[in-house]
Picture: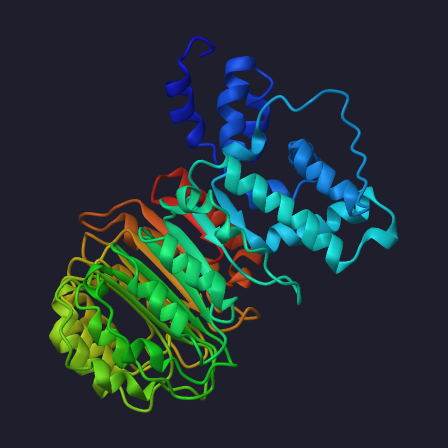
Amino acid sequence: MSQLSADCLNEIFEYLEDDKVSLYSCLLVNRLWCEVSVRILWINAGYISKHRRSYDVLISCLPCESKEILSNNGINISISTSKPPMFNYARFCRIISTYMVYFQVENFLKNHSSNDLINENNIYILAQEIFKLYIKQIPSIKELAVSRFRNLPMVPFLSYPEAKESLKNLSKLTCNSNADPELLYHLSQTCHNIHSLMVFFTTNKSNEIADLISAQKNLKYLIIRKTSHCSNIKVLANTKLPNAHTITKLIYRDFNRYNTSLSFITKFVNLQELTLCSFMYQNTFEDFKSLQYVKFPQLQILTINFKTQSCEPLINFLEINGSHLREFYLFGNNGDNSLNLAIAEYCSGLRKLCTSFKKDELETLRIVFDGCQNLKSIAIYCGDKYLSEKEALESIAKYSHKTLCEIILHYKSNYFETTLLPEELESFFISWKNRSSHNPLYFMVTSGESLTSNHKNMKIIEKYVKLGVVKKFKVGSDH
């Protein structure tokens, strides 16, 4: 392994990007391994910023000009380093968060200076030098998150001469509608190749955001989060978006209690994935009616999480678009039989489905399996007014087709008390094993700790894992 080229090592180490412990071990093997792994470790400046020693190293990389500016402003920092930095660490960074810069600058000053130096002015001055370092040293920033830190003004780093070159290939941006208008203006003038854009709408005034979206040439993923402080985002509905046809993924999450217009979504005719979530029970997304007759011929993944007084608009939507769907996650259904019957009738191509069935709707579950014969995964709610675990598992084993290989049981409460007896669980596994054609099963329960707290249940699960009937068992979240 030590004779592998740097290119080979880089490809191998990229698989360890989320395994920082292993990457740190690679630093110690030899010089070549160190040079390759350190680049990957420092890609995410936000992650590095969480580690005090790493940020000390970053500060030590500041040029003499920056250190002189700090000194002239009375910011005298002493870092105990016996040797100069081995690498130009800042140059490796590709993912930058403005909030993390301010946050870690404040922590750094707390650890390396007297209390009288910890004030907003000094935080701003040191943050300014960090941003200069990033903009001048990073050849190409890939991801940028822009957000305020308390009430501190934002360093105008986008106005630096080197910013245009450093940010021209920015592919992912997260920003807030209340950000400095000048900063948003510079982003729209500088960054035209963003593929993924996440916007937090916290104010109704967001013309700069619309300009930023319109400036993108190949925007693919648009993620919108509307907070309780923003009653509507009419700007998207009223603005011409020349790139609307390039957007293939839209996630819209609403934390506001007022109804919201969804008509702007009609512009994104090439959507492949659509997620609509409301986290306020009062918000019924009644304006979904504006989408019910719109055709999205490329739509394959649909996630719906909201309450509505009538399922008719969603049923109309499925009648037009259901045949294209491969995945449908329905979290606000509350066991509406007409909607499940519509899924069976219009969504025959589904591979993954999440929905719920009431206690008296076992026949509907059978109809869904008859209508969706290509299902590989089904997630359903159990307990309370829904099917019991026993009913759900028995019906899945009896009616599902040979393609099914994943079962997820959802529970409405973290404190759900299981009624599934060990002999009933084993009966299900025996039925699954004896099917004429069965796949090794991926079995998950979410928030169902009471199921696993039963020692006998766990023994049965372990038994069928060893027998190969269960490929993997997991307790937790599937998203």
